[in-house]
Image (cartoon, rainbow, N blue to C red; front, side):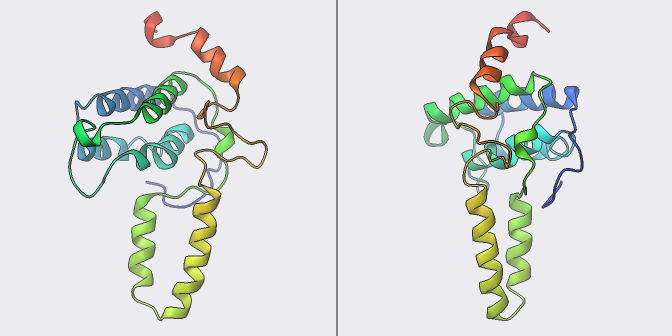
Length: 177
């Protein structure tokens, strides 16, 4: 799994996107646990730029990775999160590049590795690293941030309303494609 880094190029893997979309739908409806989701998604996140971005900048924040659970009951997604997940699935059925997500990407494994490393060194470097980490987290505070253009949260992971409307007008899932 990519920990921190810039994607060297746009990677669009249609098969991986469809597999990840199916995985997201199963996870959202409570058919699989968060642990099963993580195990299945580990192999997929490096295969496509959009999968990595959707996983690390959106899905990761929707569940508790300490305890095994399904997205049901007290762990059920709120309406806004379900709408975002539905847009992510719709996006995964397009061939759209993830060019809004070219900035630094970070995931849980990276944060844990950084925390373990920081625990072994004196306090002053921890302060410097914490300041850097706060800067990175602030930069990634919005699900998608682009140096080229701002992406609206209500259409993310699509870059703009027109891209979202185009995908909605040509629904791959309902057309049997």
